[in-house]
Length: 273
Image (cartoon, rainbow, N blue to C red):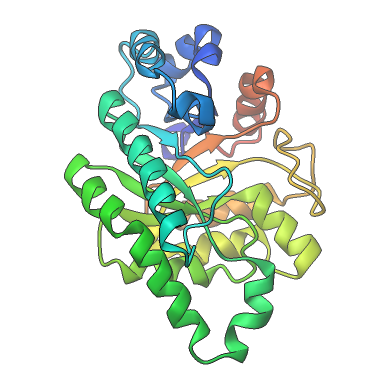
């Protein structure tokens, strides 16, 4: 049944909304705005961009979020002076969420391939990393709670899909959850020996709040439309249907002019609406 299918949304920029807003509003699709990852945007006047987004999304009743700042830093940074800069960037992202009425902000995972192979050779390494992450994020989590925003921690190099789940759960807060980027998971599966994408979905369980839908070849971060790479989409959407959560599913492509085409492909495959 069509009504039983998940609704596919889109990660895009405000200029993309100029053409895609009607499709989004007609289907009441979830939206993630990605304009605010740009450093010059964070340090400039982003208010006109927010106002234009709200104008274009007039009548939109789907869920709205942003991709948070991430360039040049990791949330497990041990240096207090650099941590202060990271906290300021996260706060800027939450300022934008407040202005938009956005309810999710994507934050990048700190877990690297190096971590997978090295953290457990030192019995204190994981604890130190967790302390550093909490020192970085605690203030942002408290503010996110007050704003009704979920910080969705997205896999980047993650090889063990349970690492982010344990991290999100460690905050004991409804404001921290898990994001999955399907292409990143497929890269990790093909290149570093991580489990396949559907395992990432199942590992997230009830903490899965958000998914970037993109196809890849298992070698690089391609951001191709679904169907152009080698991800087994039937297994991914089967796992999503069995998920106890209701994650936002947003297409995240290298070429946003193909968002509608990519959405149509998933619809034609009977995977989404």
